[in-house]
Length: 280
Image (cartoon, rainbow, N blue to C red; front, side):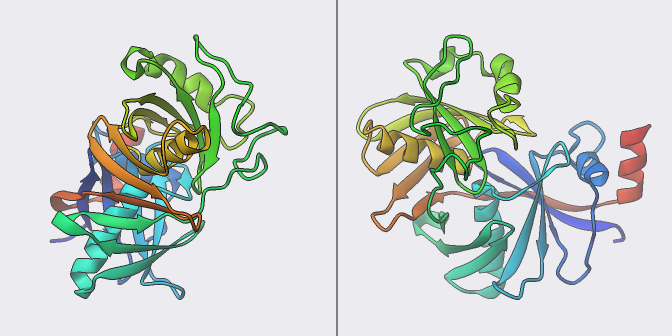
């Protein structure tokens, strides 16, 4: 069959179009990424993922948000790509290069995948913020929300702790918080509620994608933020709209994320036709 071959995958409902470009290199533009991600005229996804050759790891993972912007990290996508590479290679562990560095992933029990997401970045310059602030207590307010925590997991996160995560109108306040001048590269916005026994309920507005069923880096950021606030310990169960991720901020500083992956279907598309349909 002609056209671009792809695999549609998801991690707890955070969905991806994955294209293996190692044999046939593809240089996609922001326009073509938006066309593929469009849920009405394209394949539809939160992020478009390209698997490319790497000289430093088993493969390079390139990530485009649904708005066409390229980003440096996506935890759920890393698990999905790791699952493909593990199956193809018949191994128990793989290394995946991203523009933020090399991530190592391994097979866990029950078909889950564990990814070492590296150490969180906590300095205001590394988030980044547009001005010096205490990242444990940002001076940011919106619709009754205040005092969030900033964490970078290779992408910027802002986490608010609330009494009732379901009661926050995230679809209304998310766009303004994402693009607040405090975040020169925009930010992912997390709304976290302590459930007790080192468990959090988390809802996430992803920059460039909006509300998603799950956000792997968002779960890592929320767990790190909760541990820094001494709300939880360093091993946290994070319950998202699509399911549960298990986060362990180890004593060596690295954050391990464990959760499931799924393949929805495979197929082919005509990229030129998709782009024409999106622009018409």
